[in-house]
Image 1 (cartoon, helix red, strand yellow):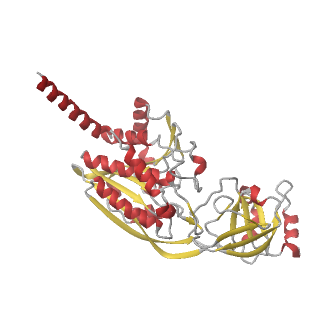
Image 2 (cartoon, rainbow, N blue to C red; image 1 turned 120 degrees about the vertical axis):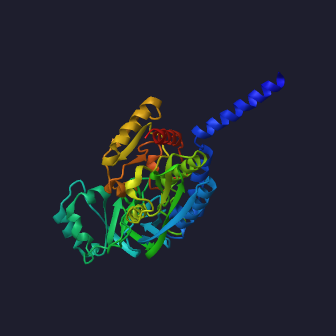
Image 3 (cartoon, helix red, strand yellow; image 1 turned 90 degrees about the vertical axis):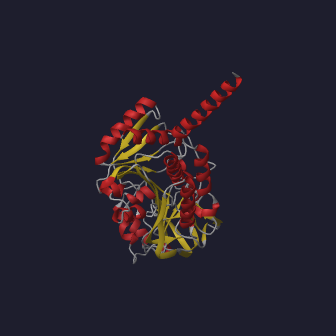
Length: 421
């Protein structure tokens, strides 16, 4: 009798383990990938110091370890402005800290030398007076200081951006934590533009810069494409995430990008692992895009050079920045993906994975968009406005500041959808 009980217990345990492998996501593996990708080794996964490409090579190995049937790399090239050299700024003799007190606009040239400062009066703004002031000898080749959004919304500043204008450049104030971008880095403008926190530039009369930029022509990147073969090959599901990030701001500062988007990249790797262990009905493709932060370059290249017919994609999930804790999950959906979205809402309502799904307007803000333009049923998952969102595009988007509560509900929501769709 005792032997029978032991055998029965062993059978129950094996069965439980099998059920677990069919249902469970791998949080431990997920966190390990996020930690690795956001480490110093990859220098912010940018387009210099080989950061993005080192991360891509790491992902190839991770997909292979996950047990996928195939991994290929799809190369493409971009032109991009970078800042990996000198990154020094002084305000009235006080040295400022890159990434904390200031950052560069991605299209800015390098800037060297000392400049007088002209502070725009945004409370009593008078464009004519501003132009008259800037014509004075004491403001020749000055840096014009103004709130970013004020300058953005006033067309009177446009003539000052021309190459032949008398100003030396622009200091645009942005509240801390200071941000950094790459989206418009495919060109270099005539005048330097520096983002500075208001407190670092308030009342300052003179600034000094020693900042280098480097223009990279035909810089080669690659998408990583993994495949798990299903029982049927006439249709497929696609799971995407971008693995590149912002890279460097000078020699010492880099942007870890734990949430953006190591969080999404780790998700598709663990999804690949899940489907490699649990053979799906249809082929599954897992695409880790590069070049997203520079303007969706990787996904735009892919839709023009697809490895699977776009018409065969049953549904595409783009997972971007889910390392946060907003209980309402933000989504964007293509027109053709709306029916699938209603299914996702129903699945979520039955299981309470999130308090709700919030569908926003479709925008060219991540890698789902080139597919949506080509009528592929697709959805973006991006967990916005949680506690981690304040670190978006800053040096503080680290593994230490990472939040991992959204991963499991996203995984389960996708898994349940694939089973029913």
